[in-house]
Length: 104
Image (cartoon, rainbow, N blue to C red; front, side, top):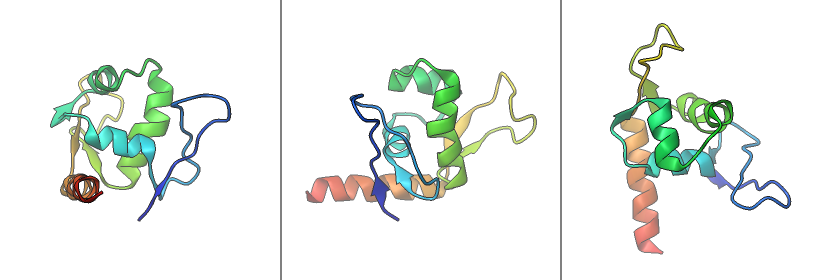
């Protein structure tokens, strides 16, 4: 798995994931946020993101598809009490990212 950074031309600090099977900058940022279990709104506050639909599309959905996070309530998907937590795979990826950062 490799990281793909896709920047919007002329817009700083905004990325656009082109392929969902890749680990994007947004997913890495989500994994690095200090949470064990949190609602989408709480994660958005941690990451200083304002637009919920954009957050869901660029952060939550790719991380779910890659198996790095999971929903605490599989049904209903859009519950107001829905939370997300790191999976074992997400924790392993976070450890791998931290190791590669320490070695550089």
